[in-house]
Image (cartoon, rainbow, N blue to C red; front, side, top):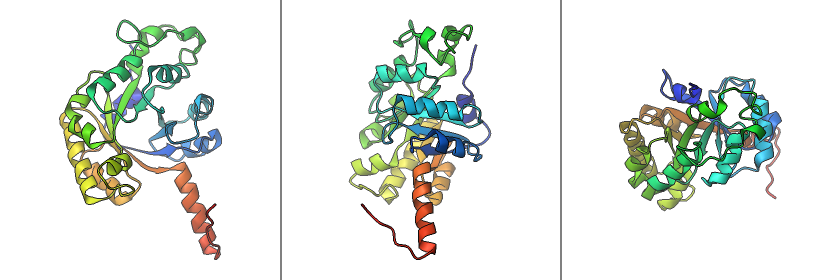
Length: 258
């Protein structure tokens, strides 16, 4: 029976350090792939990625060691089905508010009788167009589902969400959590940080790997100390933006805003 390498890494000897892929570029994705980072979050929710650009980046990343997690716009089963068919093995569903939403996402990743995923393996890259013997029997076991918690209400339901069978990991989104707590644009507000640290502890107590987004190294290390097993510490677009600004500043140029 197939198993998930990402699931094994999340329970392995060391935390997994990763970055966002939001540029929508296979070329940029491949540049980042050789960096030595452990994993990438290929984003569709807030980045200009559609099914075709996601596929192109999966193909560019395929020869490289890092694991790839894909975040769809939402947990709609039809969108999940398309991503799984093009070869996505690790999903992160955003804005999960309760156990029922988590259960729907789990069902969307499983073939009947354990779920509702449509069977189209003859057309799918995931099965190598039915060149993979036994794909249908093994597909469920090689997939992982991470649910993203981004509101105080979801934090309050964290135990029931994390306990849903088929949820492999839980990821905390500080930006939306901060906004929902009345601290828009302040993901490092003390109240938000304290909530995240408590939530990390709750996830760990449920026996699930906990993840979080933290571009500030001080907070990334703080969350790792609090039990986070996978952390996003940067993004391709922010590295390009800040790096180009720093280059311009060294030569006395002023940044522009259009």
